[in-house]
Image (cartoon, rainbow, N blue to C red; front, side, top):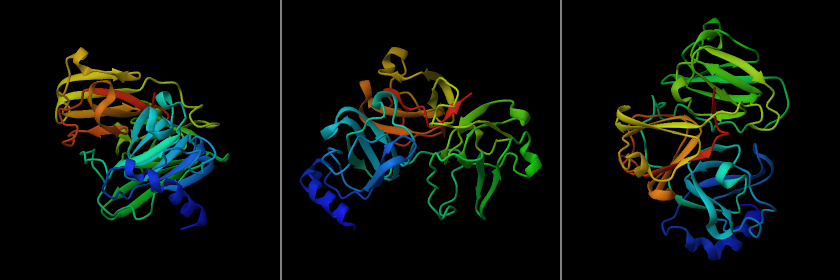
Length: 321
């Protein structure tokens, strides 16, 4: 452990009682600027005040490697707060307004949910790449994870038919190294499409193994600027497997699903755009979990028929055409 981290542990020693009594082994890296840029610090402990804890300013982007973390806009876990599960958050926007002054771990790994064709355990032996917004030629890497290993193809220009490179309907994850790209489920950029800026994407939502064309949209500039403005959207279904009555939430939030007569009725969820936080109480109280874009035909016991409120956490993660 470095001298700086030992000092950080000393500063935070008196505040660890704020975290649940059981030892937690999560880890996060905080970056001062969006897009994983600027000064950064990696910690496994609560930081009730980033400025006093050795970080010179508020954090604007985060990589959560392990654990479930609560981040708040004010010191000592006050202000607007959100729950983050493992993943890469290029911007902490909307209700958090790219401003984090305190962070603490509130749990281990999130309760499991059944996603679309999850990859076999131990297929990916290396951690996902950390992508910074460095100017350069357009580049995207499409990846297919199978029981026999990982296959990928790198693209540096438009490919209207991925069958031409032997990768049609195969991608289940991707990394955008430079530029903004539009992926579609039909050749020539037709059908349903999603837009991806620089970053690593472990889930492709409805494009899972259904990508047939990849088109370069333009330079990313600052993260998210080149991504067309879209309306974040999530669909709740009454029963598992996306059946029964459904409810669409567009925009930013639903404080109490009682107004839509859908309180504690959702048995499956399709997150089409944006990362959303779902809570078991009205006004985003109770137990909360954050789901990234993707299909969740069954929910874990912490959310199954318990969702009462939902709000958008980040729209920069992924955008839909």
